[in-house]
Amino acid sequence: MFEQFRSIEEPYLAVNEEQARANISAMALRFRDKGIAFRPHFKTHQSLEVGRWFKDEGVESITVSSVKMALSFALDGWKDITLGIPFQPGQAFSVKEIASLCHLNLIVDDASVLPHIPKISRGTIGVFIKINAGYKRAGLLWTDEDAIEKLLLDIKTYSHLRFIGFLAHDGHTYKAGSREEIRSIRQISDQRLGHLKSVFNAHNPIISVGDTPSCSLNGDFNEVDEVRPGNFVFYDMQQHALGSCEINQIAAAVVCPVLAVYPSEGRIIIHGGAVHLSKDMYQQDKEMVFGKLMLFENGQLIEPAEAMFVNSLSQEHGMIYSSLENLKDFRPGQSLAILSAHICLTVACQRRYSIGAGNWTNVI
Image (cartoon, rainbow, N blue to C red; front, side, top):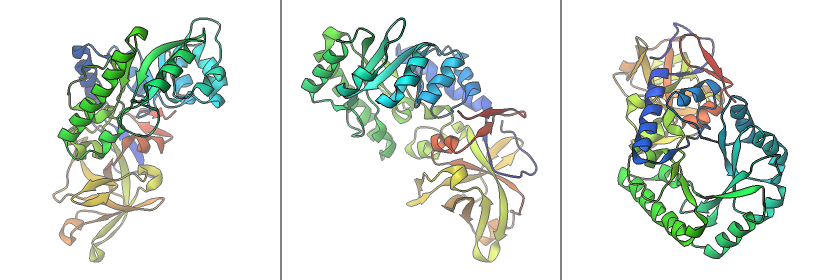
């Protein structure tokens, strides 16, 4: 159920706790049944309270996207955290503090950063080598075995570091044109990382991957030891367009008041702009849009009679076009729900968001 108000002063993000928990449970069970470690990425929800919903499903290991986030979750009791961006020397002070509170894994793809990883009073810091298995963002190319071996051996010269394995992110699944293409990307990445696992078998590497599209489609993960999806906790319209989720699995919406209705021009202006929704888009009927409009009905979200989308954004405003007949049902002050294109960035736009029954959670 979504909490709803008759009228609101400003836009806010609302989360359906029941659906979010169902999403968490389904993903945790999927990989528990496969015997694959589940290390969800917390950059999507960025909330201590929502993080505890994962604990209710037995999750003990997590991924984060910043040292600030890592420290916040470590202070909240999480004991096994992977910092999901490549380590750089400016993080050294925070890394030392975080590693004093929990077991911490770092990601590297350049030996020059290794001397800057701080020593800790006890235990070791885990190190993944970042692999470019096809996404072409960060990491050593999966084919460059000489560079991978050199970096692996360099890691092993530091007594306070422990080589964990190879980590990749198949972010190009987000640009796939079909479910079949998503599965193909997963299969190709699996084969490439499996090859590295075989080549470096003497070092006992684990394979860690993570992207919501392929994890949601329940394909084969034959060479994978650990997964790190994040977006699935709330899902969004990009995921729906990819076929990763059904519309009723989307567990977050930006609630926006109508500012004005212009029937003669066939448009509605909402108080909901780039600072509330983000500038991310998705394709709908060959047009790029910023979100899908939904209506409230007894705490549930329903589609209006005619599908309506946020067609353009400025900083504070959003514009929705529709037919003259459809516009008669809208008025200034009415609250509408917008399913955002990319919920990770939408959450990052917020200082806090509603998790129902008058409860709010701060964004880290």
